[in-house]
Length: 477
Image (tube, rainbow, N blue to C red; front, side, top):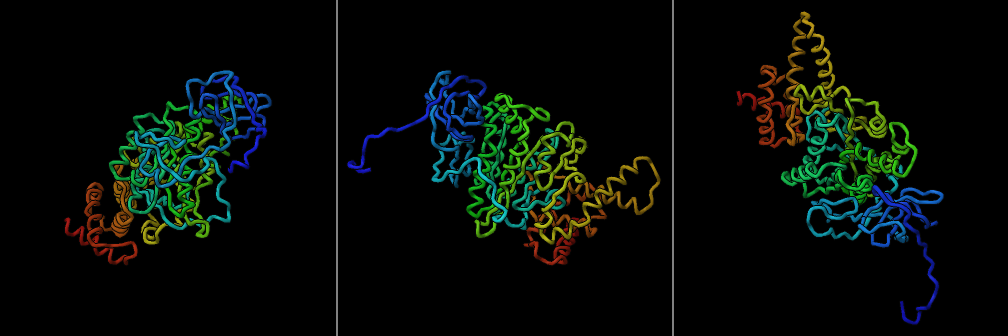
């Protein structure tokens, strides 16, 4: 401003006052024009997010909390909404929901900021799901396929391998030009460190941003964490990139929101959760989609993780997320106890739109696998009664037991789509029929190596694949 343009004038500003503080919540009197989700500044330099508006008082979540916030302290408008720095500078970094570094490295230098809470893309901006997203898991990529832009729920009891499957999906994106965002909500520091180290050892941290709100963080941070991760992913999606975002897990996120709501004296609803928890999660997951080329052409695939208690799918939060997402991958405790890893219940798992994105070669090869496996489970249950079975049923049992062994997979060992097609063709065309189930499982690495050495692709003719596989089995024998 030029010196001659300067003039004295009144500047009006609102000022509030802290009435009470505790458990990460500040009660404030004043600031009549404040809006929900607006940032406010405290006299000691702390910041807060307006979370509830009342007739006399407003409730705010403390974010950058200093030790000097006390009753009677002045509060003013910060003049902006909550946003996080976005861009490629976040790749390989571990940050909190405000973008502050947690990896002992300098702050991320970002030129662009994006609001944590944003509207989902409009219908006219969205495209059809048409490209596959490979997780590296045999069961998922062949029987429960996922497409880019899909929202696929991972659900099951605690400790059954849900996070391992999501981590495999992240590791599987190496070399596929897919960026990843991993959001860790309410986990202990040891678990966070283990996840980050696994990503670093596999070289996946180069294309991954990790957003962390630890178990001992303020409830406001745990509430904001998935929205921060979504904002990072949304920036890359709008820039035309393909992004995979993992929310681990939304059970703890719902519990944090319930904690905040009860502290703010909101009325509890079903299972003590506030009624708008469904809107909260749907607003988050609706931001995952595929954009039309004229709107950027990027995609955001969401893998939300949710925990059940004793396999109860009809609880409030699981039913909410099942209805919001495009399918679910269900982990069963009985399969886990029986040593079937990954412990995915194929009968209860479904992908409603992923089949449209599956490659035709894999889709054709796996067409009857799911039905055959489910029939095998029923026959096996019937055979336990000691009933005499005819030869055809005995053959189905033998092939079913072999298939069960072939579907087993170690943790943090994702496979390529070529490996998937290799074992599907070898099993489907009976190339492994002469082998016992354990022997067939032991020969899989040989098949995978033969396919890689032959330079096969998914577009090659089925006959060439079968010739290569048969030659590899003959050489191994």
